[in-house]
Image 1 (spheres, rainbow, N blue to C red):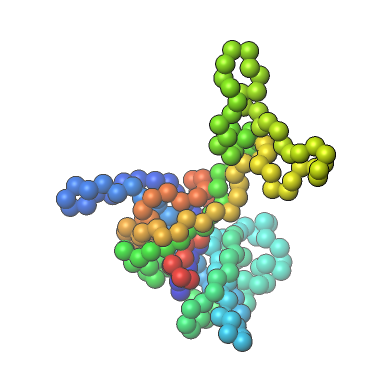
Image 2 (tube, rainbow, N blue to C red):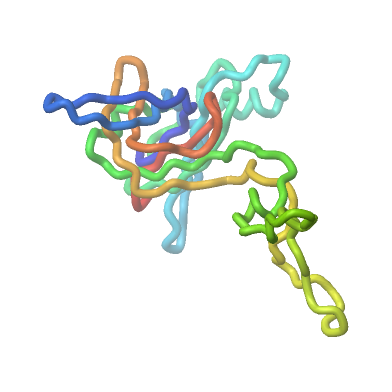
Length: 207
């Protein structure tokens, strides 16, 4: 399998034998059971649904528990994600682990970025702001937002103040620095989207 679900644990450092320091993000990846496999057709690849974690019975519906039982699982997974399968798809109930990844591989990591709340244009869009001279009141204001007579409205997509962050983001071309199969850990060079303990998906480049 070319993808796996995980939880971002935070960042640390790895030291090579020559003393070179590499900043890495630690991801607790899997084990992820295969919950469902949907066959493709007409050139479309099969779709594999993976689960991660275990949801309490009180926090899962009867339909979710029945869906998991078809794959031989005792409880419904806390997280479900679907991926395209390259080659032969694994059977339902199969466990996907970090053993499918190796150091030196290139991966892309997808997660939800940290929420920043309501922000102005200087923080959200990196505007330069107005004059900072004494008495000026437009230092961090957006300024004019559109023409008056024609078209007499604000153009769609105009960069304005608003909710910042909490968006789906993907970091591509990241290097797997280390794989710890015993503890189900992936060490990925650099930073990945999301807060600590945030859910992320890791997929091999091209998957």
